[in-house]
Length: 224
Image (cartoon, rainbow, N blue to C red; front, side, top):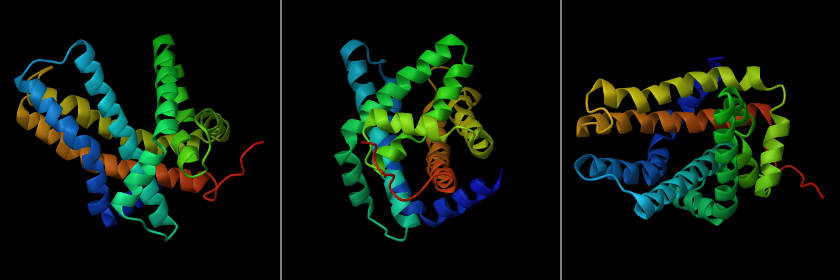
């Protein structure tokens, strides 16, 4: 259970600098927005939707670039951060479509009994891998992830659950422990991001390692 966590930690530590640059693609704008909300008014209506859409897009680009960078390093064909970001942006449309479908599916599952949402989140976890590394269209990638994760729960979920618990704890508990409630003080925001960035980098390496251990690394043949 702990082996993937250790291996991911070692990889993340060895590639910390470029992965930190990729992490800033999302975390820096989010940090600035959180500070502006702390000392100003919360965005409403169209403004709030635009900000949410921008952050979602940046999050998609960030995760895709991280996966591409890690994959190329793992197969001994390293690329730069700029190349990883460029390739991620080229695949942005199918990635966004897949993320929207995943979000709706998982949210629908949570609205039912929570467990269906967790189940769908696990089953669709590797969808972006099949878009980025196997050039599959969004729906095909979602179906591939759903199908190939059958019987993989005991191999994937234990280490992933440990990482997820640490990440959610940092994101949700720290601002409240340091005060501020729904509007945490600036030091709580700083601390949260200072912890979330390395946890995110570790998580990217972990998710890739779980993919690498359980699925073919070489491109799959497309269905006709």
